[in-house]
Length: 193
Image: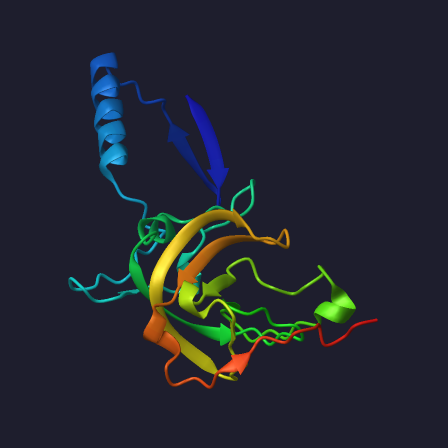
């Protein structure tokens, strides 16, 4: 028997001895319950009725909390792969936008490609928004404020022709930018030195 002194009182402690069969039974029950439990830390995307877009948030892109191995794609993001989703975010302001695509982020970002090169401030949850292939030469003018975009989500590592890697892409349907002004792609880069 061991004693513990606290607040002027002596408390006696005796080790509790349980029969081995009870310990094995409790362990098996706890293990089975743990295997059936779903992780509570990862919210799933809002369910959408058939044919409607799934509501997905940037905060659902990565497992939380971030572990020792860094960022990991969440089950919610992986489950949305190939589905129609709705994302709300900010269009990245670029000095040298590329035709047929732009970036969407959870916060406003202004890029200075000419000055900074590859040292950009894009957050890990950046989405590459791709226009329909019929609009591959279209330049989308920058818009301030929040944008609500709906399209087919693609998840996985893809390297483009410039070497930039994207993990999340949103493919817009052809009619997605009907109300947007059309800007032709520039024939030469704006900053030729």
